[in-house]
Image (cartoon, rainbow, N blue to C red; front, side, top):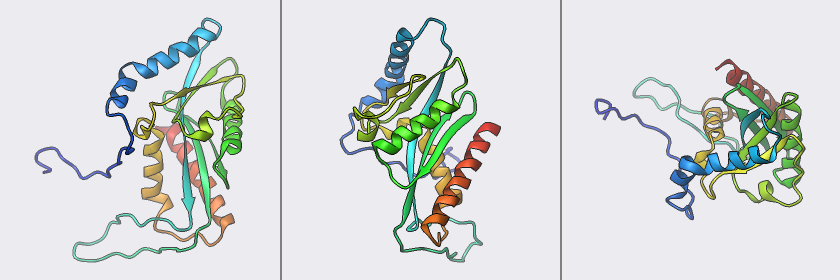
Length: 206
């Protein structure tokens, strides 16, 4: 398989109700159309930065991932059975190497509004942020508070694989968030904050 150019990758299952043509349609014109609508309502020449937003749950009951080990051995890893959790909210701008994130105890419309406020603070003066996110209820709710320097462009419905932030969550789980025990909810939050900061630093460096 390696000689044929194949490598073993983690699969991301598509949503069971996904339209099979939605991903291609969004890539070929859906995103450009959404961006054009935003530009049409902004003053001509307003510079735009595109950010991709998502949330990831981090819990004491984490997963065990593959580990480097000598052939013929069976490595072990700690596995907690408690259920305290937190949520990492992240929004990245790949072009500028910038990120804006929060770690919060809940994931709902109110905490999403807090994240949009954090993104707004991170947008340079004179710029406007286009925040690309999926169509989760908390993202599309009428009571979501969207600040003046932000516009939202929705991904195709039920197509989370279109969001590049998903790759960051997978990298964090594979390297930092798994195979460990968080002794308390406070430790969990502190660890998530440190990891989110490290990820933002890595993003800027790349």
